[in-house]
Each structure stands twice: as C-alpha cells, then as structure tokens.
Image (cartoon, rainbow, N blue to C red; front, top):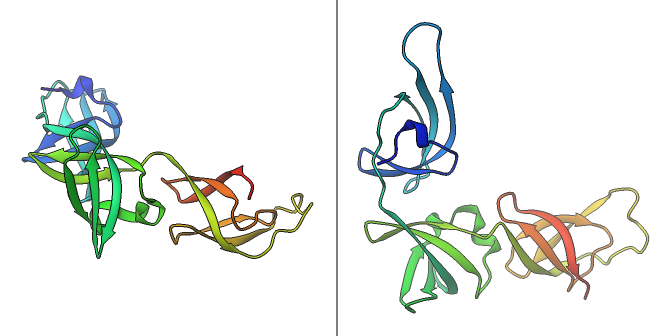
Length: 188
C-alpha cells in the first residue's frame, strides 16, 4: 500500500473505494505541528477533481487499476469499440469516457484503457497522433514569416488551426492533450 512518501504526479490511488490519480501534490512542513501532504486528485471514473490533505506517513489504498493496450476498431452510435491486442477481446465504451480526444481518434489507433474491478473507466490516448487534412483553404507558398493561420478539418472531423502553407492531404502531428497542431509530417 502506498504512503504519502510514495506520492508523485500520475500515481494511482484508491480513496473511499474510488480510483484516483494524483494531479498535483506538495509536501508541507510547518514550523509548528506535524508535516502533511496537500494533493489535488482526479477521479478516474467521473473526472471530478478534488483537493485532499493527508498526514505525513499516512497510507492510502492501492486502486487495483489494470492498464491494457487496445486498438480502436469502430464506432456504433455513441459506443466506441476497442480490441485487446493480446487476447482479441472487445470492449465498448461510451463517448463520455473518451472526453475531448474522441475527435482525434482514428480507426486502428492504439490506446491505453484503464480497468477498475473489470470495468473500463477511461481511455488514455497517445500523446501525439498523425492525421491528414481533409479540407482547408489552398496553401500560399512562401507565406511563413507572418505567422498567419487558417482552419483545417482533419480526416476524423476535428478542426485545428494551422499555418497558411498547409494543403489538403498533408499529414500533421497533433497533440492529443491540447488538440493543437505541432508540425507537418508529410506533404500531399
């Protein structure tokens, strides 16, 4: 069982029979009284963020969270189907468990799915994905110095802001945490 000395960002713990991940923590040693750890925790099931203070040395529960690498197969209404790359078992997840990254999900993308007591609770996308531009205004050659931008629709339906020199068919590297354009990977 982890204690407050094991706390680090990204550590998964169990609190009140719910799985949480530590978003932020700070060890505090006041001049008077015992040391404590101030934390910001995110519920892995609901996404709710909560602030909690632990006494120094206090133990917390192990959440029993299992992480599986799965491949996105297809969408049927609001349900997204994933296949375990080891056992070929399929799991369906609702759109709410995918969050904002649903717009960046392309078939055959490998993601990490967290399971708590056998139930899929959340999806962790890869940090970067490569997606092609489906629709945008024509690119302007040599217009890179001004920093002007335009909107581009990607193959998954997501819209991103890109520099003027990009064209339809160009493959872009997109950050899934922010949904922002990083760089051009290949030209059309």
